[in-house]
Amino acid sequence: MEEKPLSYEEAIRRAASAIKRFPLIDIEGVPLMSTIAENWKSVSDFSPDPSDLLIATYPKAGTTWTQEIVDLLLHNGDAELCKRAPTAVRSPFLEICAPPPIPSGLDLLEQMKPPRVIKTHLPIQLVPKGFWENKCKVIYTARNAKDNAVSYFHFDRMNLTQPEPGPWDGYINKFMKGELGWGSWYDHVKGYWRERKEKNILYLLYEDMKENPRKEIERIMYYLDLSVSEDVIERIVQLTSFKVMKDNPMANYSYIPKPVFDQSISVFMRKGEVGDWVNHFTSSQSQMFDEDYAKQMKDVDIPFRFSI
Ligand code: PPS
Image 1 (cartoon, protein in one colour):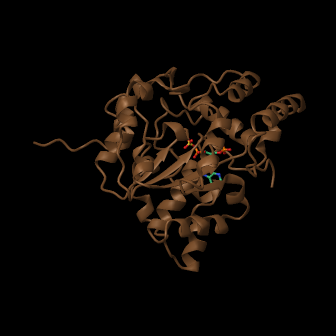
Image 2 (image 1 turned 180 degrees about the horizontal axis):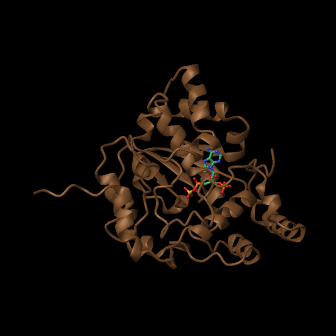
Image 3 (image 1 turned 90 degrees about the vertical axis):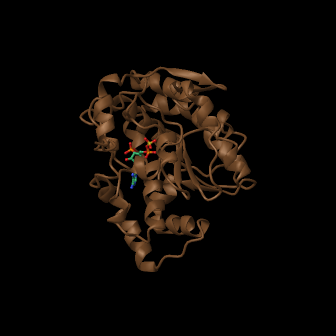
């Protein structure tokens, strides 16, 4: 008798005992989870179809939110259809590799027919060349550095595949030095910003999405050459609000078992706010961060906002 393929959730449950806090390994100057680094060649050789869409972000910048908006736009706001599978299956994470039987991002992509929506946290210089050669559309979402660091800190506490975050004070330093998984936030946001015009990248800011979701959803719609009605846009605004996504089991990562994401430590859909950093940075930490930020960002003018 033929065995039924494992569901994604069940595969993760079966691999849970092999999960650990994987160390980071340097790939071309960028620290990546060892499981990714060990499979780097197959990731780097990935050849997308020209119709594939890439959603690129630094971790915790609003990836899942952007993925949900795109899925709903592609399905004319059909909420039920967009609950057909968890985010990670609907829109696979290109470079992720985990112990078997968990399918890697590449495994999931292989089973799908283009056009596919693909997630990556890779900095622009590590994105497989095929995306540029095939002129794939790319949406980049960036979030202000302080909120991004806070969100990443809480995520690293509960994501038991990531290195121990250690105390917040030291974590800020690791963030500033680019020692966290996927490397420097500064290089990441600058890399995509500099190439956005030449490579036709739609560059979004989390703070703009929060302030005026309708406007940013429309920008995504135009970029994707889609046309949905006003009512559908309004529905997508509602369906992708923090509150609704937090309760959506296909978008809130509640399907990841506790040995991988221990959401009793911190939930994936934590706060979803702009400006939560004020509850974490002391005034001296904030000053030190601002001084370093001014140096690291002096050569670009990306309109980040730390409050709205
Ligand atoms: S990941 O693991 O890198 O894919 O995480 P990512 O999805 O990029 O980031 C998670 C943070 O985004 C918040 N989030 C949202 N904010 C506002 N509205 C919506 N709909 C939304 N969905 C996810 C999520 O709560 C995490 O931020 P924090 O600040 O930790 O709450």
